Amino acid sequence: MLQPEVDMNRIGILSICGFGQICVNAAVQDTRIKATVSSTMGAFDPYDKEQRYELRRQLNELRTADLLAGRVNERSGGVPTNLPDDAEQFWKDYRDYYKTSRGYHPRSTNSNGGWEKIADLPFLTNSLLDHADEIHSAVLIIHGDKAYSLPASKAAYAKLTGDNKELMIIPGASHTDLYDNLDKIPFDRIVEFYRAYLI
Image (cartoon, rainbow, N blue to C red; front, side):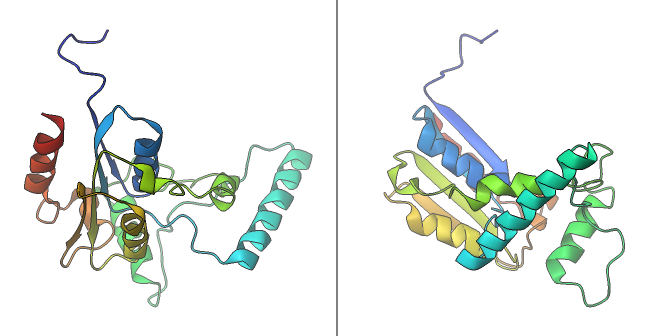
């Protein structure tokens, strides 16, 4: 039941990691959202035109193979427990989060079986932020300067318009630091932002 003190025309949202782009996109769709915070935006589509086509082709072949084998959509395998010494740093960051007590959960897709491989298809055909310049409400994008995914937040911010938009880059923070590192997450700025635009 909706509480009487809740104003459904003044909604604030906060999203972490890959859902950062999705929550910014939600602010395009829903004019009731007055304040959006995206922390550590994920990089959904780092491909060029030919790479996107090839990946779509492979994923659609997988859909056919899944159907013919009578299986539910194949999963990506989640974050590996063991990595080679020369693995890219973001894989090490993910492992140190999703495979340890920091972020492991039996039902977590990243901790275990991974996402359905075909889940990438919508992101290869529609850009989440095509209409980001139409957001009237306030947006705060937070990202670590050591995060491999920082270009995603910079690209999203570049599409935003208006003087109520902010990109806050946290020195020394990796992609996963802004999931749970209490020394890196700018709680004070998030609270100030919501107070400025929601109260």
